[in-house]
Length: 537
Image 1 (cartoon, rainbow, N blue to C red):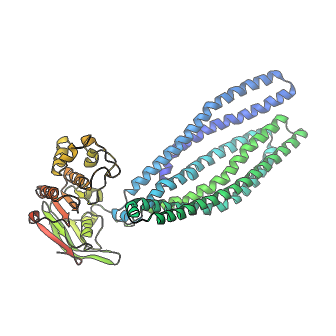
Image 2: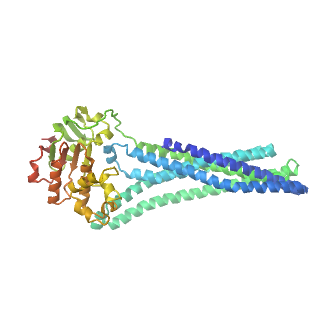
Image 3: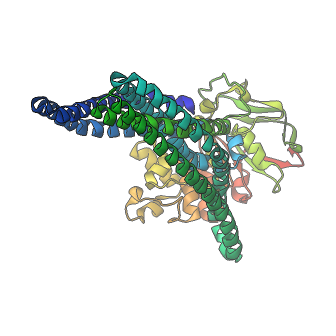
């Protein structure tokens, strides 16, 4: 994650250069104010007017400069955060499918919401705050040194002691911030689960249980927030006391030096004002550094979530499917649960295969092996003589189409959901629509292919969703089509017509895992595989 955020460094440099100019002018204004006060007390009207005019001009310049400071600061935070989110999303889609499916993806939602917010507030704002604080400190240091080095060293001593006390006061907050991050991850996971189980909750009268659980989890987060706010209040109060005492002591020292004739009255004002510009940045640093450091744990957690535990290096390309897919002594198990054992078979190009068997017998696992979602525990799968394990996923996926029972639809037009944002001619799209039995459905839509599908297809039926998925597979014109219970949501007549279309595709290999079997079409498959008892027969 740090690597992604570092891409925003040019914008950080721009923001810090801008605030450097503004802070430098602000420091020069304080020198002008010192001179104005001293000339006024001396009764030198000419120099008073001259310094006042120059001071007004400088203050006028600060207005657009401070606006530019705000703009460049916002640009830095915005660009860095956007680049971080894009990087994280990109890395998520580099995860192995089997590893992603085996994880609770609520942690990714938490990372893109709560964790990104923490990165913004604690890290990006913190880094900028540290840089800006150091610039203010340096400018004030130079300004005071130009007037009275003695006052500078006394003030720095007071400031350092105050900063150390402030840093020690902020220590207890770090542990609670980490705990709240973990609570937010669990809370996000729970919300996702509850919303996903909405129908079950309503149908089984689980409302009271959900309310109680929600109250407990919300109360935990709010209570942790209350503890953090309470500690923050104590810290803030102690810091304010320390700051006021430091400023007061500095003021007393400056006044004493003025009485002794070491500095002028204007210099007293300059020293006090610029000491504040040194105090507050240093106090800010003691608050910002722990926040910046605390994000390291967050970075490690996010980077760990993006790792593929199976980092096998794939080296081969597959331009097209030419001959066959062969299983040679293939076995597969989920941990200690053996699902398939010593499977030997061949799937030839252009042939059609029906996969049947009892529920839990291993049909879905067999299909996942064909789709390269999993690699065999033992044995090998060869495609055109190449070990499928060595073939790059992106290269293999270009040659296959998947039609699932659980179809996902984007909140977009029917056309984009069929084409999946790829370019096809109208003739190609219309042919896929006709073959998938969607013609009448699309004619009946208010805006035809431009009709918007909402929230994963809530405004269309399950059968229509399945046909859109089938149209996707037909339109892609890949060498291999894998179907997983694709006909389960279709009426028999439509399912038979689509199955006939698939069986008549020349040169296309079709592997259909299905409980829905029609006598009229079963014998048109080149082979029917039965998956049961850890074998494929």
